Image (tube, rainbow, N blue to C red; front, side, top):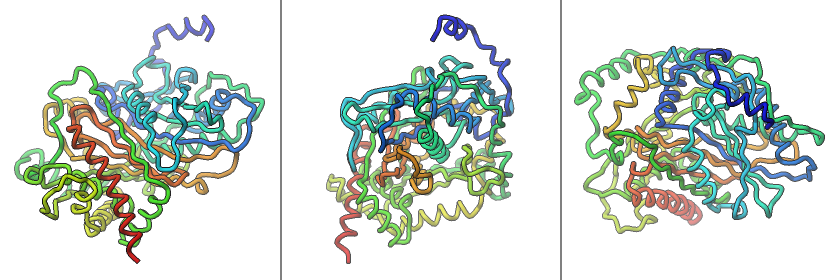
Length: 498
């Protein structure tokens, strides 16, 4: 960067001079408030890229040129949020006039080779902890609200790992697929003579409208009355279930962000296929099966006499219910469902996760969870909890009031699905393999989060994340081991049944 550019960047940015795009919707403001408070910082999707051709252009030039095309296609990548300390409708999106890719693209080199089929990746876990601890407040008004981290390996020059970390107001988890699709297409179309100027001018196209503009989000009277009565008489209409486990209380005050922890379990290609097969055979889904294994692992890890219920909430994409949104446009449009799991056995624990987990697992419950998901989808956005945000006048204060209180729910499980190379394009030298979906653990919500995705290689990758102190270390370790062993035992049982 020249001395002139350094001097220019040293000047204070007048945020009000940036082009104002549109107000942030209420769901987007939910994310801006958490980011402002430091309670939740980013979403991430990591993908392994492999090139099957020799390219003479340097990797940095390929990355920069590909990003130039991606930014021109997705206007949300040049948008930042303004007035995050406020609430709707005072929070809004503004457009950066240009993006210097040197400020938001990082290159790292691995110590060990990239993992193989079914192998865990401790280096990626460490990277996730470091990146999700960072917000987007540095160089505010100059840098975009996303980062791209490219990781190389000295022994495999044709393989890279690309992690995209972004402010949740810009997009939801499912839309992260679209970012990687756009990046893959752009990477495969980079010309050998590309110069790749790191300064990219922002596109002039409009942002996709907010969820509230794209969908009416109707609320039924019973749904609204129950929500109101739950606030007025919580002991009657919003009573906390007895013996519901939700980890340790939210901290009374937050002076510094707690240490973040990430652990990823990778299910082999063979076991992933068999898990899908057995789930279909049992008339349920992989998402429902994994959710029940998470609940079963928690029950196996918790004292029998103290905890009898586990509540798991899961986001659902609303993209299928939106009109006027192109398939390749990124959005932040979700609803959610919740399911209360109860212990269905009182068999004494013998302290071994591989036995304990399956004694708390049942296919009947997995089918019930699938039915709950289908029931929520069938509502087509009606009675979406997001619609209730219009009754919250001060979102930052809404989150502050959760300090020192019991958490809710027990955990959040988000499975963004399967990345299909054939569906997302399979032309060109670069291909996408393993993927890892991740996010910041929510400081005022559940004690830990579970995120899953199946990449182009066929591995389902399950990522666990938690704030230090939100959950006892011994419990979360047992849960991770329980889910891993539970999957393998279900697959083993499937192999032995004709």
